[in-house]
Length: 76
Image (cartoon, rainbow, N blue to C red; front, side, top):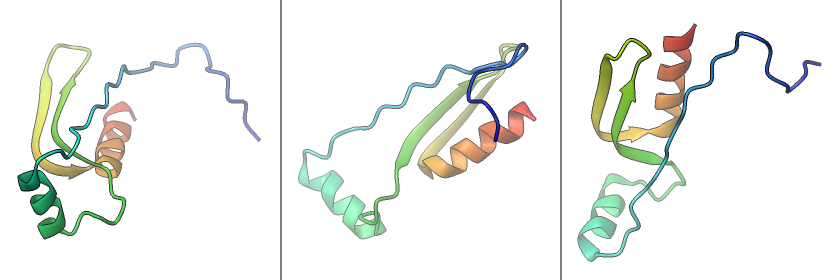
């Protein structure tokens, strides 16, 4: 079993995750229409800034698990 301590040379990316609260009926209706009441965590806008300054922006409902896979692909 591996250690959970970071190794020398590991690079960690800062990640800020924030989600809107569903307070108005429009957002609640949209979530219900899209069938998203199954516990899936979604992001509506993802902005990734790479170490060389280039940016990747993804807009629209995107599953957080897909974002994690994208970031893993970028760092390998």
